[in-house]
Image 1 (tube, helix red, strand yellow):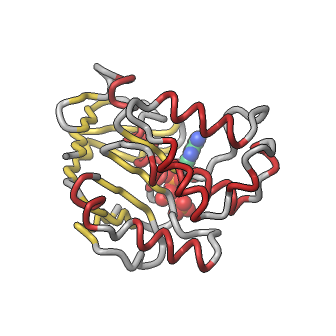
Image 2: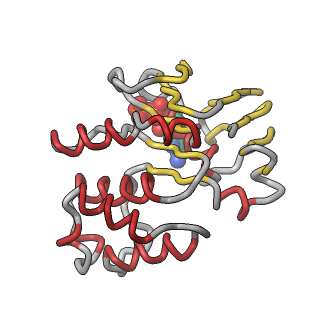
Image 3: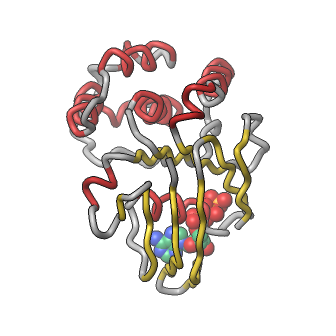
Length: 201
Ligand SMILES: Nc1ncnc2c1ncn2[C@@H]1O[C@H](COP(=O)(O)OP(=O)(O)OP(=O)(O)O)[C@@H](O)[C@H]1O
């Protein structure tokens, strides 16, 4: 299990960010560090296929993002805390959509994550009515439950209550997860997780 970024170049109109940037990550948690504006969120979006590099290639194992965009996306989940893409859906509908998109997704496992994050009472609410923390918990439930090889999580602990932080820390430290998933996360604070490595931008 490997994320491989080769010779990546990306810039916003006013802003060169990555020039021939390369990175290889194996299974386990990698902490992506850097000052505000260094490009951490942009890198997660590039690795998740939410932004397109101007040059270079991005791979999960032998699947290249540009050549096989759908296959690539089915192997990764980007948890960015962004506002909902489909604001007219209920929480349940957003979750069902994801379960139907990802082959092998286990609805029972997702339900267990939702229960752990105390989200079951919200299922029939419009997704736009969730608080910021609840929205993050919904995304994290998907992140923990979907059968993906690559998890990209922007500031996983920001905005979570104390119990949720403890639960998430436990889930992201579980040896069986660390053996099968490549997890790249940003955090301004030391994440207090067993780390496979650190990348400094
Ligand atoms: N859509 C955009 N258009 C133009 N510039 C952008 C866009 N998104 C981000 N930027 C700029 O790119 C740079 C990197 O932004 P990014 O959000 O990736 O940084 P970051 O390291 O995640 O920062 P932070 O720690 O503050 O979250 C910043 O200077 C930002 O202003």
